[in-house]
Length: 195
View 1 (cartoon, rainbow, N blue to C red):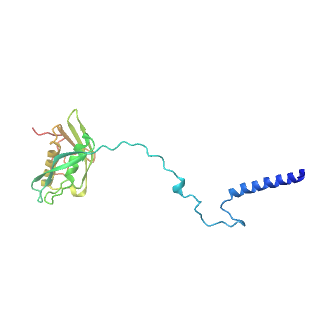
View 2 (cartoon, helix red, strand yellow):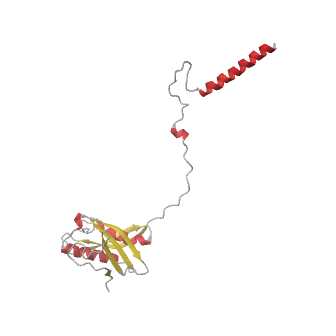
């Protein structure tokens, strides 16, 4: 081989390599500029995105359970009906709110909840003083007559004072201290544990 033919072979070899490298970058095109139909080589999002390894998380604490007394009205709003219910709560401080929320529903059609259209917006207990503070938000069905309001207050007191550590109950309505919850009976502030 002459020097010139070697040079031509070298140029042709370099050109062939360049064309093949260039062709690798054009994998979605055919000769003549036509684009092929989707092939299995196109990665799907599930094959491209890899989820990170799961990080260890603390297992949630199981809910604590306790049997408490809940109080409801009879169908004529003449007397309270006492039921034993099981409440669930995460921390000891949540036991009061769980007991109060038990007053909002009843499985017995003869035990009518007086608190079903009411929300306990906050509940806090001062352990050192033995004071429980609750804030109530009334719905339209919570407005009861005088006998209903009397039963409502009795149910509230009996529910919170079943916990021996509660010495006084402070009741707010929509964040404010009020003289009466429904306009029929005076609301003491605080309501103290009966002797």
